[in-house]
Length: 320
Image 1 (cartoon, rainbow, N blue to C red):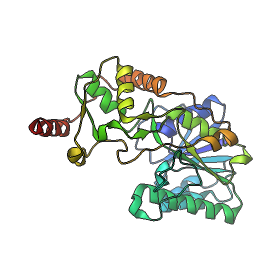
Image 2: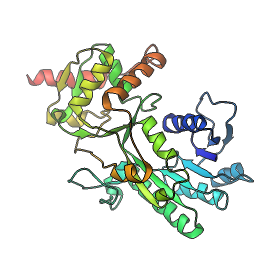
Image 3: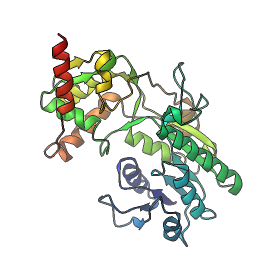
Image 4: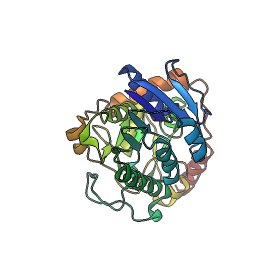
């Protein structure tokens, strides 16, 4: 198939690119051309700014694709620009949304039909993704072009561009630094490996069961925050020094990258039924792979500002 990736040089898009090439698809990527990435010569690279509709239209003029994977749209305006440029030129549009669209669900796991946030008060990131989903559905209804929506949870794995997540904790563990743990580590986190998400995208191709549907993308297991910290330490091969942060100091953890206010567990039953989704990366194996990549690509040059950690540790000591 002729495939367009909107994005393609960072993390999810870059992983998807290589999975598509391994499956012998013909791939074109569209992005701003800002991120350096080693892209095979067989891949056509075109440049456009998602915030400039005319730029996107010019870049996609006289081109057509069997399917488009949109990894880089965060707003309705961005997706409307690409949809306008691809009208009559694409056979299937697959959009990357997020599990951050859900709101106020207290019974787990969360399913695709569960409550979505009603307005921006639940968070601008999730709300903008909802508006983008709505714009895509309206375009599909008007044009007859099928669409699918993938809602990943926290995505991790080799090549992550979220350096404040696993790489930051691998750094702390390598340097024998304490891991600061809020809320006693009770909330459950449901993450997903980037390669499993890439396979979920690919399983939508030529699959009518995916048309007009949304799917949660989450891993085969989940862990408490304390369990996640321990699993990262196991990957590094050290015993972690975990320091529980009192509730009154939790607001000072401004850079903490994981959900602390509630559990986040998602059902993938629908994806398993319609897409044959079978995630293969467990927490243990996925973090081991992530750390191998970190050691190979980042460890020697990675640095981290630990002043926030030191400030909180000093406050904890003063409370003793």
